[in-house]
Length: 139
Ligand code: FES
Image (cartoon, rainbow, N blue to C red; front, side):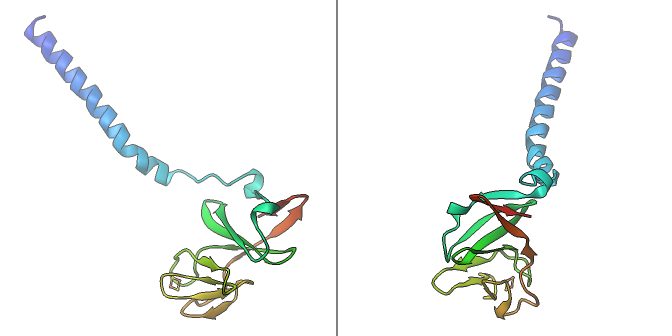
């Protein structure tokens, strides 16, 4: 193999390797910028009713954002965005208190999404939820 052929081979190999490394490095950015799965037809999410016990909350992704469905009393379901209306932290459900807590600044929300205390300026954003057989249809 002559010198110029080796040089061309080396340049081609390094270019290919560089392109592969750039592709691997750019993949997380591509994933970040890509639209999120909506969770089903028309953005609706099916959740088996059995996953949400009485007094319990079930967190899930709704249209690419965290959401929660709660069974506040037997057979009474409500769904909300799990994003705090103060500065956007993700709320948690405290079953022992029967309320949502935002861990960032101690914002508190009732099971119906209303603000109980702390800095959140407005209630949690409600999401329609309906019973469909043994499933909860959210969205
Ligand atoms: S972000 Fe939730 S209370 Fe501040």
